Length: 447
Image (cartoon, rainbow, N blue to C red; front, side, top):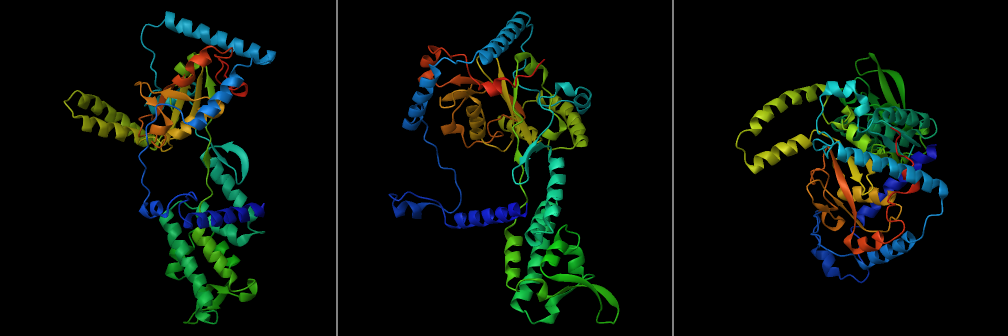
């Protein structure tokens, strides 16, 4: 297990060197273009393209060839037929009994009390994460925090120094206090490296204000000092009163120079990162219509703050009756969206099936496009997603825009359509009604 810790730092070190090497360029590229690039990151204006690139055309042609082949899988065909029949029935019932327009978007705000009382109406049961460094489990953030802490403390005996660095960065919450602690620890170690014979740098009085306020409260700091060769001892202070000290002993480390490795690790370490799980769901139309409430984990506010927002909403309704400028309305809209950390994105396919995923509000449209693409049966075919307002989302134009930029927060339903360049060929293929992969289609939830 300790090998995971070492590999983690090796990767961080390699990434840092790669970044220091500067931006990449082609061998045939002129040096003038490199000199003209600015050091700050700026988004390069994207050239709008209505057609497909040559590479995309080749991939599309290969996918179209596969599309023409009939699927020889009786079990899947039977299951797919049953799902299609169910969807068709629901769509017909919906159309026949529709007295008012069914909302296309998931409700943006639900009273907190309602969310607690009717969890079956949740669009998702919560927000879940993965942590490849530790395991393949998919868990809520709070559970991962406990698991990460347990995992790190289990590694201390075998790899104390590097693990302590990760504990400092991963098991404490206040970034400012973490940074202060790291700088103080580095100063302790740098003094020993620079002045190895100076006795005053080899003792830390634990009652010292700098230590007791900046270092001791931070989880993992004591483990780091023990790994650096310090031991806790009771010694008389200058006034002759016995106190607790941390005393450095060079016999406890391979070499004084090895402290340089710890200093570097302390300064380059980052918290163990969690990856947002998409919590992929496949829904029938009736399920999508009923599952519209968002759980509390989607909000950036506490339940108490949400209740306050409900009161403000009443005032907002009154305000909406007043004459307001477009800028005022947009400001209110942005303020509304900032209340959310995550968003539910649903993609409605022509057959009525909906694919659902969870995204961070700061992820970019490219992530949504890739999510859809990797779940398509024919992933090489180009497609377009349309917003409820009719805007066509195109990677070349919208790829770098966040969900907030595109007004897709906290939830929306995007409509799937094949790219016009291949739509006719798909309509003439035997598998024109097949959209999602078989292993994805079987995830259709039972009513």
